[in-house]
Length: 168
Image 1 (cartoon, rainbow, N blue to C red):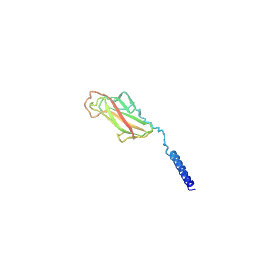
Image 2: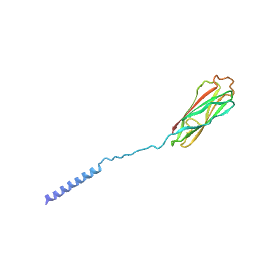
Image 3: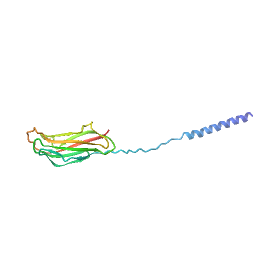
Image 4: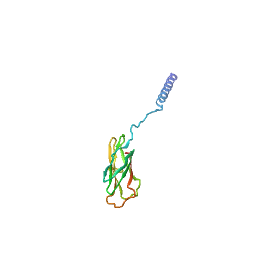
């Protein structure tokens, strides 16, 4: 009887070890998770409109204002002191990401031209924001200083304004 009881206990222990081994194997499998992430946002900030310019005095557009992305070029003919041309530039954020103006450069083709001034208003670098779906109007003024009594060697002046926007 003693041997029969011992065999039952050994058989039960072996069965328990076998069940635990199968349970461990079932629970010790590698878990693998697969997924895909897609960005559905888009970036689209650009100049969408430029007025032909509002003249003061005898100022005229030598050529029509043009734009490429966030860069605009103006070619103004100034005849006498006090002449100026004022443009309204519309910048539109047609994308889904908000934008912030982080760079503003004004580049005349002759930076040393005396008596000619440039003024860009309606935006401020690192302050102006343009949320998705909104527009902003920038005013660009090119003129001949009314108090200037000297005659500039070059009265025709081309000007390029570059606006740099980044996501915020």
